[in-house]
Image 1 (cartoon, helix red, strand yellow):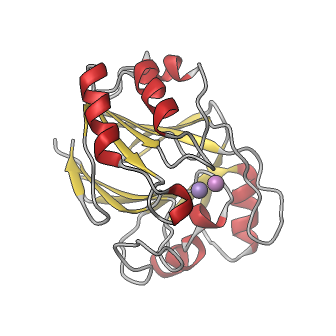
Image 2 (cartoon, rainbow, N blue to C red):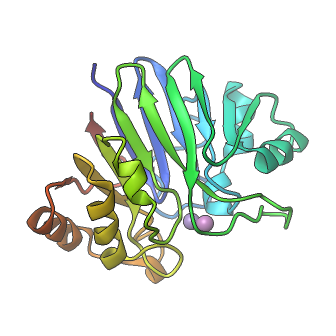
Image 3 (cartoon, rainbow, N blue to C red):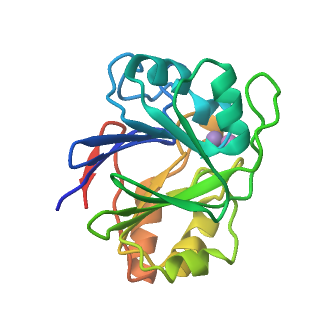
Length: 228
Ligand code: NI
Ligand code: MN
């Protein structure tokens, strides 16, 4: 079974799993590189990795329009409920749940998670999705490098999505070290070039990944897709 991944720019991804539309960190409205619109994108489920505005993004509006179920940590789910989001499914770090489209486990991320209005957003997360046909996709979320990435790599990853922008997250050098720990079949970089502060050369990074590891590196433009 083929699954289609779409990068909407920054940390916003869509995953089409046999007709189930999953969005991750749907930041469109204030996203200078957004490929897509909050009032048009399809969503059955929305995963929010942490509370920062460039990740919560348009979650409230999209959930309101589509009725999508939002998956996030318990603190963010509680906050979203207070914002009028009808359907939430709280999880927490290390915990997984089987949804109709696959198994979702929240993973460790080293970052912050404060919500846009200053509310406490719990701990930031990454997410490991196992599709119904056994494909494993790891979204690191916003994070620095950590050695437990090796444990996620032990699960046998088909695809890893890693931030490379530096300043707020791992930069290219640590992201290359992350690839060595995660050992995915394919890696796709994100969280770069949204603003000047996180400008990077993703193609140079991808060449280094392919020269120095067994992993294939794919660089998408915002709006670009990848089949896994
Ligand atoms: Ni963040
Ligand atoms: Mn961010």
